[in-house]
Length: 466
Image 1: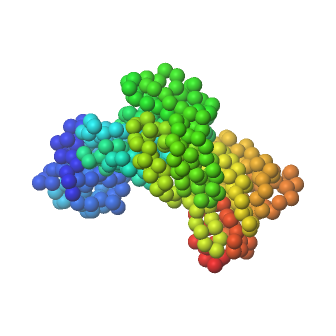
Image 2: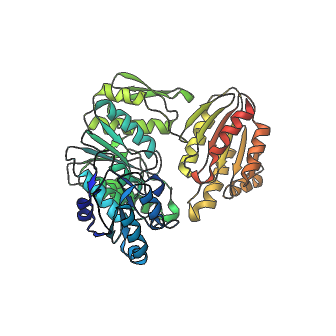
């Protein structure tokens, strides 16, 4: 593997102090934060998290091949004798720093600044940011070499790891920038310094940690923090916080949406087969279904056309997008399942229920709704609102799962809802009830927060219905 950092660069960039005996392996070819992923000549960054402490896994990392370890000063002082012996035995080194997370981010910033010709794109938002990132990446890859952060490598720890994938071959780098606490976007923006930044929307995701939507908007607005005047920012045309987000931004703010996206002439809903988009005189078959995904497509179109991407590349990118795991993913078999259980908050729950209700389907439609997590004081009210929406829908059966969803169940009982509904907080009970209910031809929506892991239903239900 190609050398990523020399030992000297790591010490200099992190303002660290070299500890342990270094060797002939004075470089790193990759960076890991999980000791189980340690390989020969990697840099292992020992992070001190709320649940795990990476310093407890230094031995595993070095045994796995790590040639250099980043360690925090207080941890080094506490473990000095044992770690020094370990390093000497494996001909590895430690770099002692005050904060390993900050050091990791400094290395990511240093790495990206090696490529002055790289055009960096940042995407954030309460809903749709991952899908929009994938659409943008798919479009840009039709025009030039593009790197896109993988999976959930979008946080203060994951985004730096994504940055290390950038090489001199890349013209574009697309970074999803996610945050769940105040101050996190500061670090992400400092690393990416996007030339083009897009906010999909301001919702209530992670409101438990912020207290209000305005504070969420304030944090997400920091994606524009390092604008100097020549950069472009993109915001949905109907975003209630549009004026707040664009105020005093040093750059050009461009709206996107049905009224604003240049060349958009309308669309046709194709149900589960996606959407036909009329854009710039082209008929584009966009494979992701639902109006929310149409908005994601319009966001991507607006951003990429303003980067000068040719219409033919935009069309090809839109038509080649693939759904991601757990995000409006359609699984076909004896039953058809819409698996949308990577995340859930009041906005995404309301939207997907509206779309599910509007879908034309000959057999029964069954909604399996799991708890929406990280809503704090808003949790009970948010789940009660789900019940009020359920009452208005034409969906055949509702299965509610999780402690938080009990609030929705109670409202349905109080309102005397005549439809079929069921609640439990035991997964085994939910699965058995669904097995007894689901039959060939049914269309299921599975929607819930990642923490309730409703994707566990998919394989057993497909086997049961076969």
